[in-house]
Image 1 (cartoon, rainbow, N blue to C red):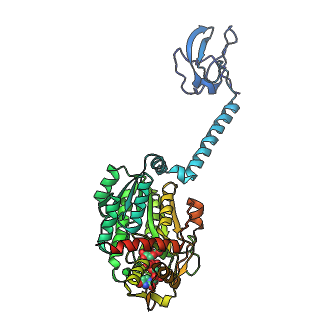
Image 2 (cartoon, helix red, strand yellow):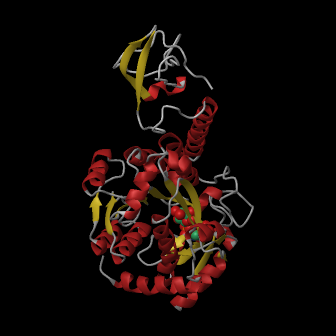
Image 3 (tube, rainbow, N blue to C red):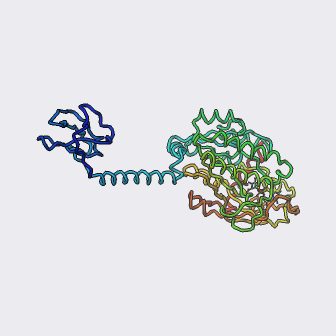
Length: 432
Ligand SMILES: O=C(O)[C@H]1O[C@H](OP(=O)(O)OP(=O)(O)OC[C@H]2O[C@@H](n3ccc(=O)[nH]c3=O)[C@H](O)[C@@H]2O)[C@H](O)[C@@H](O)[C@H]1O
């Protein structure tokens, strides 16, 4: 304990004692009736308010603020230092906790939480496409505000895209690559979530039209990420089962390496996932990429096997059966896919990839037989060689999606194809 005992060089009235004075200091005079003891470390707590000359010394009165106690005598130096050490340790522990927790560190979390619980307004790109249309219809059914965009390209019959957009009534003719218009929509509508389903689809078309994939799936995807970065708006986007490529380890799990794409389409879809990771790393742009497994259903894609097979079977035309039928796919009904997508809206992700499949692959021949049974007509089979870029089998391990978002595909191939064929019969009889 360090007490100041000298009266000489005492402070004068009104001296601020903002820091402990150095050198000879105040204040005790046992020759008078007046004795003041001040601990050096407590100088900062008081100021000298009165002085008077007594014998050779100075009589000093010190006023203390009521910070730690009403007395001038405070805690011991050891106790003070202990308290300071505890406070510093406490601050360091808190800092370490915040710095090591990425989720809490990033300001975007607040945005995520904000968009999560405020009024939702979802932007669906590719809104006139097959999956996009069904997502929009489901959001409308759930009374969630939604707007769609689509460039209405002619990869397949555009009238089908207009049919879908006429049904939903919320799709605007806007290309994802149009940064200005996309930014405008996001700002004016106060978009809270983006579901990006606009893409150049089709495995085999990428053999002859690689640039269409680079433009839509790479260039426009980067454009979208540029539009979204720093907005705090989470992104849900379509990836594909095709990223597993020549992987022979089945069922396909998100943990498997995806370094052997078989087609350019697959490579661009994998590129989406890599780019999404880059934007997470650089800008904390949150995203979840969904690897869809051969999605089918009403208002579907005419370029896909279920649609073209049904069409040809009803017309009595031959259907090309690749690799002599020795192929299998994890065909997944549209409603199961839409359920999976919608569930992602309310889940907080940083950067995530999920399989959305049925988890029950079917051989191509079984698939054709199911269509024949439902249609009540035999197919004319035209067996062909394996097409370059195709893969032999797809098979989703959906355990991660089940555990993380409660995804639960429950439409069997027979039920799903029955619904598709019912729709197709009506659709094919309508004037187009
Ligand atoms: O999950 C995906 O990642 C992809 O699914 C879809 O690709 P695929 O699984 O190839 O579906 P699809 O064309 O219906 O062919 C089904 C089966 O029929 C065979 N097939 C096809 C056409 C044909 O004329 N003959 C034929 O035998 C064909 O060889 C295959 O074995 C999407 O198109 C693609 O955009 C992407 O989303």
